[in-house]
Length: 149
Image (tube, rainbow, N blue to C red):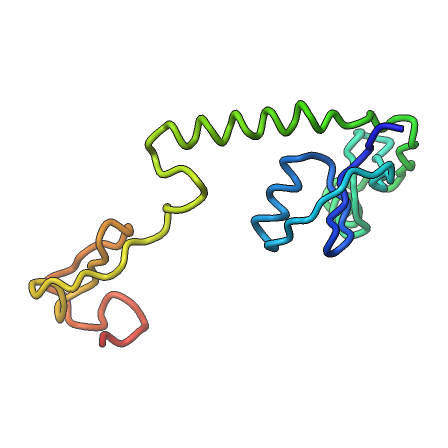
C-alpha cells in the first residue's frame, strides 16, 4: 500500500510531505524518516472546510470564527504520497538555491557581528549591516535599556 505520511524515526511525529520532514529536521536535528500508511488525524470544520490537526488549532478556529461543528477526515480522503516526486522537487529547489549565489544552504540572514573598528564605540549603536541605526551624538545607553559595555 502507498505511503500516506512520513514518520520521524526519532520522535514519532507524522508529517504530510517531504518539505514538512525537512522543516522538522531543521527545527529538531532529527534525520531518520520513514514512509508509513498511518494517516495524520485531521478534523475539518463543516462550515468553512478548514482542516485542524490539533485540539488547540480547533479551539482557536472556534474562538475566532464561532464555528463549532467538525467532522473527521476519513482515511479514504487522504491521497497517497509520491515521495519520489517530492524528493526530486526538493533536490531541484536546493540546487536552485545553491546556484543563486545569494547565500543558499540555510545559513546567513543573521545580524552581522559587532564591529571592532576603533571609530565605532562609545557613542551609539552600530552593528555592521544588521539593521541597527547608528547614533554617534547620543549618550551611551540612550538608545535602549541595556548599558553599553
